[in-house]
Amino acid sequence: MHSKEIYKKIDIFSSSLALARKKNILIEPLPINITKNINIVKQIKNLAEAKLKWHPIGFKIGATNKKIMKILKAKEPFYSFIFKEQTFNSKKKLKLSPNTLGIELEVAYKINKKIFNIRVNKKKQLKKYIDGITPAIELVGYRQKLKKTNFVGQAIVDFGLNISFVKSKVYKIKNILEFQSKTKITNLNNKKIYLGHTKNILGNPINSLFWLIKELQNKGIFLNNDFWVTTGSTTSIVPVKKGEKFTGEILPIGKVQVNF
Image 1 (cartoon, rainbow, N blue to C red):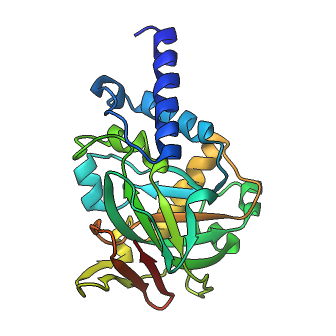
Image 2: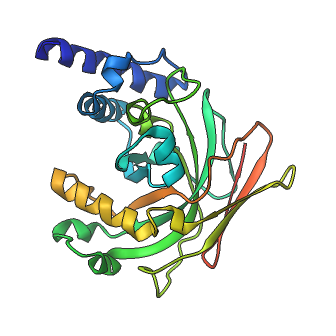
């Protein structure tokens, strides 16, 4: 495709995805030749997020769990914005979106904006700028009418357009760089339990945070306020239905609850 044709398609598809997010609807899957081109996919995602005109309050990292990376055939993580318009406190009742995949239990960090004033080269530099940690639940899915993804571009292209971020109380812990814990999601309706571990996030959630901060710095991306970073799923994706309630638990930093 010629550059003008590519730009036109990027503009059209980004507008369609942004509108689908605003109206909580689905669109037809993007053409395979588009979603197999990671460079074009990232441009569509970025432009769609900008066209939302929502308020970014942080970043969500994907493909940090080996099982999910294998499903998506992802070679490295990817990320998108977390938006204020889809951020909620624990025990909030959420409306399910079309094509919802389910929920994930994640470790989320509250990061001081001053981190953008330095160059981060070592993980130990992060400690000074981590204001706290919290268990978080994310509702994830697609804006496209996809039954499953066959390659990573299909997930990246509308990644941030589906995230609902549910956070709990922020905790301060001493061993923030070495924090490890078993994790658990419980379906409070049928008492089914889904187990996980923070080591499922690139071996340690701090590795995910380190990757993101370096990526943002390399691309000159920053926020003007303190922000959230949610680092990837500690569990498999847990299916959800209307009327169900779930708790996510990461000891010793606490619990988070979400209702549908």
